[in-house]
Length: 267
Length: 334
Image (tube, rainbow over all chains, first blue to last red; front, side, top):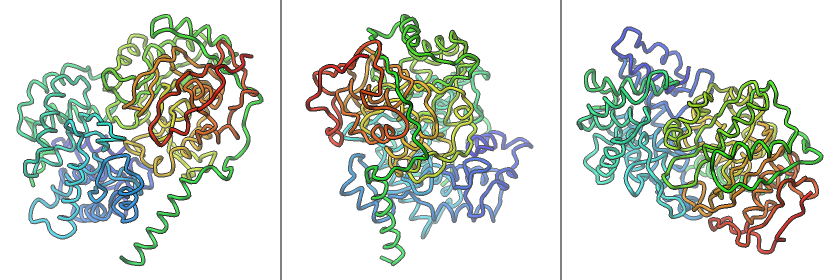
């Protein structure tokens, strides 16, 4: 079992009898996180997506409580004071503010856009209002981190907007996932610019994974996605998609206007 | 500030210092250097259908025993930015497939796991490689999402001790690294050995594979190539990249492909062709102690000689010391 395709497949099948949370509950580690695959003995940056999936499939208080505790404790390595100092003084080649941190892909590494966005979605879904204490603190820092890592020309990539003075290009899928996490934030110029960038890029995107995430994000912002869904349904034959994650993301995107968008977190 | 924070900070400093120290102590299991290595520099004017023929002629300079073997071709597909010379050219990849098929390979697979892009298909599609692979019925594996197996590392410079690696790579009989010759803002150069970062799966290590950076890029390269054997190198040095590589540099022509049965010899030669000094690139210098040959007197240079460029490749400031100040204009051809 690989975690990300499993989560996306469960979300796509959430209205079917086979959309059961058992596989996720069984795979959760004692500390509340999930590994990247069945025999992975470390926490994964996709834990936020697993938590969001679990919440979408039903109510599981114990598992949800442990997942929330893990997310609130986990952070990118630059959140410690020594690394903040290093990134402020001697290691300044990548432009970012180490005070603004989120979640890493792997324990002991930096915060990156996609795991931070997944974690924010899960926390916002779990704590839809009146956030206080650690929850409020981590959500605020995570949102700040996403805004700090935006690419200067709009959108997001893995998390490096400027390297050695060069402006790096955004990626469609990372931009879409970041925008989903920022949807409930008050209109911010960077989010607006990212949305405009995504709308423009998705109009010519021909890769199913990126196009699917575009549709999910644009739909969450109440934009008209029917033409994009039509294109997604025709650009790639089912036999040309050989990974479950892409197939499930495409299914979610094609169905989001009819059956609801699980990434449209109310907060 | 608590005692725990101070202790954590001290450990972080110690860990950082340990990984950034140069390679003072050998940390490999055994000396596996071949007695001699062979490197061929093949002049190539342009990316065209003729690449297949040129590559086939070049491969004749080596006695490759690949009949009935499964071959894994690992190109360098990082990202797609229109007009930027980032990736191994698709025509070189398909030329390599054709050559290994003609040599009697049981199966030839192209595989890659981009470091920043999660949408591998978008890179394949945008570069035109996806259509070429489909037309020629060449299988492709996304190494970021392949099944993974835990493997102990055969060197211990990074302190990682083990890595989860893709089954497709581990089960291949013969691995061919097909890098794009570029300067790199974190590792100085990115050639056949750095190219193997693409075999480290994103499904476990994320996008980017940040753990390798924290453990030291140079150290991680050494540990990785000590563990995953590169059996042959076909380096795309027709149009290269200098400056702020691997993504934001500028194109620079060398009009060559470099072939070798030794990744260390290949990378040392590519570095010289870039006007840089391989002895100053830590991962090349260290692997030359136990994996392959860097010295001229242990390399059989064939086809064309090493010709240093009048102006070395530009690098970012941190790697300006790699640029050769005074080098011979030509090295001997054997």
